[in-house]
Length: 611
View 1: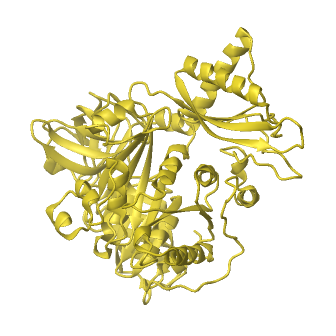
View 2 (view 1 turned 180 degrees about the vertical axis):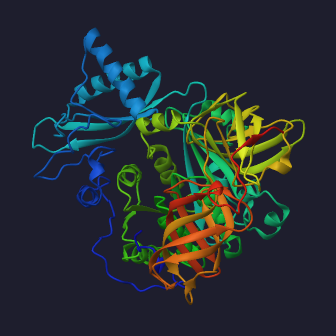
View 3 (view 1 turned 135 degrees about the vertical axis):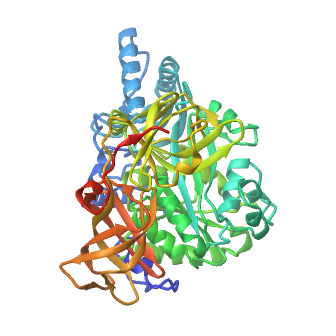
């Protein structure tokens, strides 16, 4: 477990030393980030195989990385009048690239397979794009030209290369769905920004845009989010925004969208920190968006939220809001403040300020291929300044997992994490959560647990809804709500799992974890009680033993034995652990489980009972 996030958690006083870092700030004025690609490759060797799309050459090396066989990036020198046999071959190839990108692919036109940027004449480029459009029609997709760039070879005829996004038209509502957790200090403008993005109307400067997002009366009265809410922003196959400005219901958005961004709006106030941590650990976000107010800068829980995202290894980008309230100098000062924090050894990030559409495209590509890149946007929810750049970023940003990883998860036994429980009139008991593995269909027989005594109960899945619209099949990695009919709600609680009856789940009261203590005022020792977060599990646990040491201090590592206080839980070896108590915070991972049938004083279980 690394200790990069020690300084971020600190004592929560909101200050940090402006330590120097070797990482330099990146302001991609030309939109192609040539110098950035070198630093990315050094930090992440996988960057050569996924989403390497910076195509402006330097004078000496007009090359992209060589084309990879896997992934959704395809290089094509030109596609002018192909034969019927060649056309069919190209269509099959496009299907493969779309499958690799889970419905999205990027074609670099005018580029050889070895990555050399040759370029095409205007006529050949037009003919190649026409052929690409025919290919996309054949496989049921649309194309969007992201950008074109001239290649300077000192030739009489200018030559261009083009970057084209191919996106499949959705079938059976299996659109690409990315989850973005929204973090930031209270009053930084998180809910207002989401309201503007998802409703399609600018804010009036007094918080009108956020009213549709609040779930409770006290949230409307105070203007502060205290619960986790979900909002959706769609993009159709042509890359156009689909939100509530043109669609009356979430079902209409899902029907016309090929790509969906699900925002998880989390609380910014420190007293709701447990809710924020639960949202980060339980809902498995693909990315985190840290919202910082331009007029207050890094304040309150901003640093702590950044540390949480880094501890859980969630890729993070930053949005500076409320720039309409500040002078340009104030906004630049906030940007510089963020750059200093991101460059310090506790973060070791490479800031990337986005100032144009070209920058936004580059930011999305670099962000996906390197965990160290941190795009920074400056926007206003009142004037609408730079909101289009943020939408371009969301449209282009690719999924982190490829089709092969997705297929492997789908082939495993069904495991659904229960995060929310409702009672809906005329429907009955409904649970919300994320399908961790396998496939779930209407009518499936599953078991849910563990109960306080470690048992699992049988149930039948009724209807399934994703983003408030009906869905027949739920696949691994997707979030949804499942109707359970007349199943007794009192038998359910957050932190349970619904699994296939064939699975033999490991239920335990006690588990060992290798931890690093991020911050503690005194010493951490046996008998200490903390609140443990492991996935959707959130429960108080007692430290039963600290192996090899009597006590721990800030920054020290050890293997610790924890024991749950209230009821046993379903855990997996390797799962990330985050624990807290007051100012005490620590992270780690589960190394060993002690099943409840291994101790004589704890009753045997893992038997299913009928309800």
